Amino acid sequence: MRAEPSERLDPRAKRLWRLEGLITSVFLLIPTLGAFLLLDRVVDAAALVGALPWLAWALLVVLITVISPDLRWRRWRYEITDREVDLQRGLLYVTRTLVPLARVQHVDTQQGPLERSQGLSTVVFYTAAGPNRIPALATPRADEVRDRIAALTGTQDEL
Image 1 (cartoon, rainbow, N blue to C red):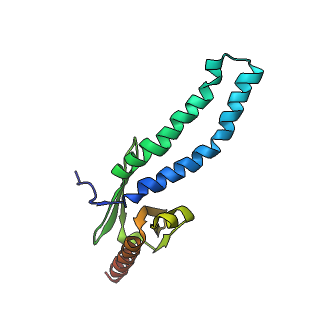
Image 2: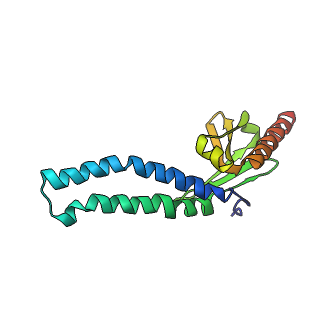
Image 3: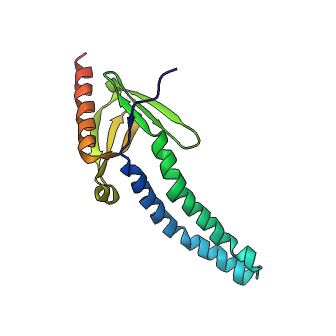
């Protein structure tokens, strides 16, 4: 059995994922309000039953803003060797992906507004099978990782 990849994401990834969770929770208020109004006005449910949508929303907010970011950060690991990129991620189910560098077609970095606000970037490298990502790296580190993968894929072409 292969050892876990050795590199971790930047710790600010947890804060980024919490912000994303808060934004998602705001959008989840709409169906929560709809369920509340349906239970309160149409069904004329008891106060306890009418509070169930709010309770479900609050539990979901805690899950996506408090619990999930820490678990995601603990599980997310990567390692770049001379032959492959090893990715490990997942919450309940851990996915392990080995991408041979000989298969990488090109690599770049991406940075959305929330990532930019936290000083983070995502490295994306493409194969014929599609893109692979290493998210939430400090921007200078993401540049190093991008350049290292690019240099190693050039070396692979020469073999």
